[in-house]
Amino acid sequence: MDEFLAQLRAVAEPTRLRLLALCARGAFRVTDLCEILGQSQPRLSRHLKLLVDAGVLDRVPEGANAYFQLPQGAELARLLLARLPEDDPLLAADRRAAVRLAAERAREASEAFRRDGADWDEIRALDLPAEAIEQAVLARLPSGISRFLDIGTGTGRLLELVADRAERCLGIDASREMLALARARLSERGLAGRCAVRQADMYRLPFEDGCFDVVALQMVLHYAEEPGAALAEAARVLRPDGQLVIVDLGPHGKAGLAAEHAHRWPGFADDEIGDWLGMAGCRLDPPAILPGPVEIRVWSAHRVAAALDLTPALTF
Image (cartoon, rainbow, N blue to C red):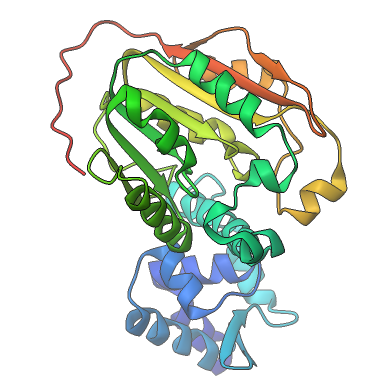
């Protein structure tokens, strides 16, 4: 009875329930959990200690790190987790952040990243036709852009390409390491005055509605747990009749490719992209299809909305 009550008391707190739900999906370091939940390490360490002391979580040392996970069995914890609503926005955001973190860790640890450093791009890592892709993207963009947003900017290559036709370019990425590379690249090319990068979550963009003329997602969606949600958020920050450009893999069915590069999705068909964009209030144009080891598609869409007086102040 005492053990049962101690476990109930340990989980009866919102943050600890979130930690329990995450650790039921895999093993995490405290630094990982801090990044996912956006809370301080001392705070989360106290929560984790309570859960471990109550026997709800296991702490598994590994070298200089320790991983937290659900113990074998853990009947009470699993019973409680089964009662949590799957569609809870906070828990859903935690799950997306955890998947994104896993993908970023895999990308950062890849041999291509470590070998080529700041010149690394997934397009080149997969031996895709980089120049043809870049030309296809530029062909879709207008010549005069006021504000351009690149979601999942990586090394900042797309910002570099668009800089001469946009007044202000902003790239966001979840990876601090990638952002460091992008900053170095933009500074080296003398573009830091016009282009900037910052850390942000593509599911919760820190911008007002209608901030951008053009939003791009290049080689991002196949890492996303919920591509439709990512596209809806991208559409939200577009001005009425603003343009959304998506570059990603066509359907390929290559399981080895997905496993090696931590892809969540094996490419996308036009109707999938069209359905998601339609729900996000965008009108899809015919795609450009580029052959290669894996077929690449460049989709373009415009936000369909009544004219609004949206003149938000945007600083970065």
